[in-house]
Image (tube, rainbow, N blue to C red; front, side):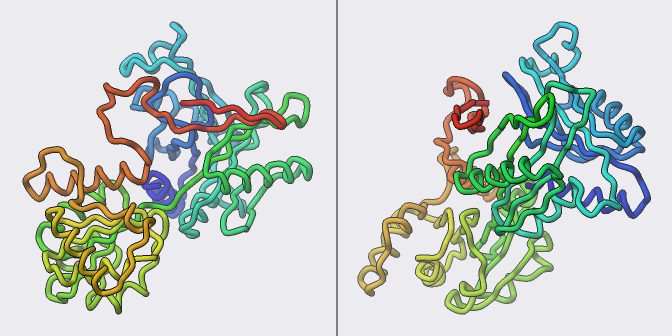
Length: 388
């Protein structure tokens, strides 16, 4: 999501400067590639790049293709085959071995609905959303519809004129949002047919750091680099200040019982309890029970968490199995962390692991592709899983 935020901001800056732009999007791939479908890059007419569609090997040629799309004011689909000796200049530095399809869309700000406008709405909604991009793999020189539908908060924003196609795409978007798995589908419309990349977009991770001590500084710095949205919470107004934490979005001071009702939490929310005040952390833990969240990390030894849970039980506070499953104490992965910076790395790595539902093993121990998130390939009434 950070890439989308950066692109939207770069678009606004370029628009104010009167620059023309094009959006490059990886819409499909076969085999191995550095970036997956959904990777984006904004290109301005003076060559400024925001985002990335590869590890750097495609960007030079992609710039030329984007400038052509801007000049002709027409969507263009380009294929880079890093398995072909004729295209070995693309991807040879990374040892890529795949076919990457990239759609280039000139951005026309005077149109009410364009690709960047839809991405901006995704950021405004702060909810899971589905974005649909249509393209033709069978007719490169023909019409490439591009980014044309957004589904979020039960609202559709679309630029699809074909009524039957629109109805089918809408239903597929609803299915993707419900099943939380992106999809590729071939739509049998027109002479050559149209392929749809039905993309699932999740809001940024919301990191709630409970504790405004000095050891929170590296946690804030690293999470900022990841593009996470950070909130700092503490009972000490002298510690929890914007002067000490200028990178965070919100700061709350006071008792947990007064703060927690004002917090927006969802399945992308992670808490780290690190005030070094046992009673404050325990009170916060109690207030977070039965609230939607993905992760609660408790800094300190395991006996600290065990004591908290024991005392809560003695006080008649029930901790459900669902809550217990997302409480991690001690917080962090076992990477031998000692310093505050290393501990921050350990904690953030564990949060990412939990949110991605991964085991956190070394990649050399993994078989198959590095990226194994599934994108469903839908063909008529049948579906199959394609690992990328």
